[in-house]
Image (cartoon, rainbow, N blue to C red; front, side, top):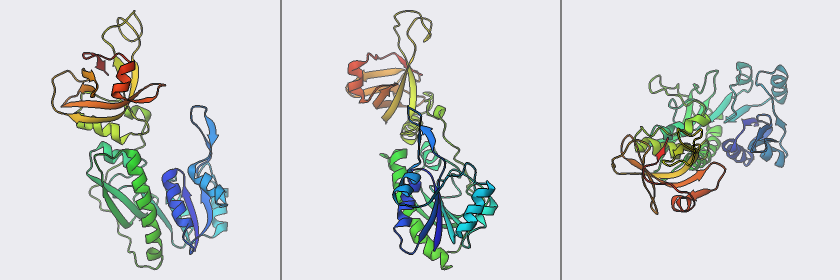
Length: 325
């Protein structure tokens, strides 16, 4: 069976590897987004999917827009039986959706209709969901609105981060896609329309989404730390009590310092204004929240290394009474 694969990040790469390993599938082209500047040096870099495709001697297409007539013409020339999509990052026009005889299948990392959109893993964690999963769906012209073929759930564990959950769901999605394709092609997987109730959305995460609001409950902030790791990361600004001289950080002193929080835990109720540092010692940095408090276990100053709180405090003077904003 002739298959075109569309995807861009590492999650898509896991799915592509699984498809390539199936002898009955012929990957006739891999479609991924154009090389983009990334990293501190902003060098032009290929997507993980392109890197794997090139290493595997698979033909690669990188259209700027999915609606480009020359791109659609090239797909038509390839005569695909099926298009498999995973985190491609583009909505496909009807001209492409109607092209393969078996249509287009998408791997989506949520239990649809929950969390339609670009960032379902992060939003499931931010919203304190107990479980999430993967959905294999037929694609239509909407945003993750097509009929469901198969789904598989997994619990969101206390030790999970968006990174660990991503890796687990990538493996689940790849395995489920490989299992679903032959059943679907044989007509044994009946597409089910998505329920009209329970629809929610997962918009793209922005850097500013990582900013911590200490007026929120500690559990909400803990979920932000976990759910936005590694990018953009949960962060706050330290406002010291004592400042050496007037400056932009406040009426009397040094500018605020941005701290990225990598690991934390909720601790019992403690008295203090939201954002106030209650303890700073071997056991970490305890910060008052709108409800309960958060113990910061691992953190990083801007431009510095990621450190355990005890190591960080050995080299940085942070005292009880100072504030994180």
